Length: 470
Image (cartoon, rainbow, N blue to C red):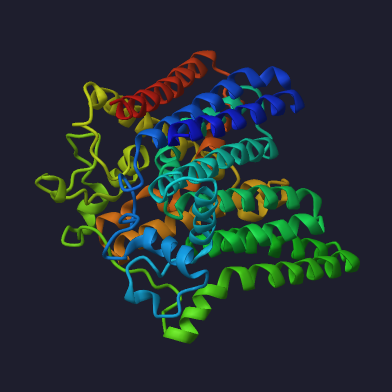
């Protein structure tokens, strides 16, 4: 059975699950557009992994069976061959400094494929089926997060379509490094936190801790969940004290203790092990990519002039590197760190459409999110109005952007500007887009937004469809 046939079987399984979910939905009238978007999104992801080898458009992977034995592929092969954590300073081999969960699961998946009779090369290629599955799980979690946040009808459809067709998750579905799995666990943590805010159930706080811990065991950027989670936990504690609810206070303390028992061993085990055994700093991140720090802060923030919808890099024969942070943010979120111009005819035309519609949507979402927050003057008013869930989302977004800009300027290399580090922000962005639909009464404006989202989805689909053509 070929790799493509293998992918078709996996896609068929996902479609069957989707059809079952359609009948289990509580609001079936919404499912037409949502199910269509889901199926097309799944189809694009499987088309992409069928056309993309594991050494193409990857990040720090290098390649399997590489004689140099470096990169995340070599890290996976370490677990295939040794069945244990590396017993040496992980800084001594490129790519081995990453937390191991994704690489362990990948090694298990490759071994399973070998056991099913695949050759080693085919088994490594089939690893993209696993990362594609992660991408599909992320999309399902996004849907439940939107439902938890109160989106419905057109707002829910708009938000879901934005995530379903967002190009970051097409690229990440074929990327065999640890980014996609981390974003799945972050989305899982967001969902269970929103649910816990409403229920205060022990199972829900345990699932929050498990999700955050596993996200950090996949990639340390999972720690970005910590500030927003801490603020919500602190508010709930203050609230029961204000109400003089002694039983509620003790109950929360017990829940927080359980949270700590789960999250700290999972999230901090690997970095603490490396610190103790090999002296690796907790926040160790090696510089990689083309340097852009020679450009002024002004240019890196405000010089957004461009003549291409794709990133421009000297290593690709361009005259300069993509040094502007906002521009890199937009471009890497839509077409990654790559230039598709020479791949096939017409792809650049649709890439310009994707760039323009994506930029419009990003600006609209940012402006609306700021406007929405400014309507409530003080953070405490958010809590008084019962908007703990939205407060959590805002703090999460702020934390992610602080992390992103700090990374861009503290490690001034092009790769630090890649959107993939904070791709989970697509969920909050989509939520705010859904809120625009929910609160806008003007039919003409709604039609314009529908057209904009439709063009974004169409251009994304065509760019990646053409990219995958022979």
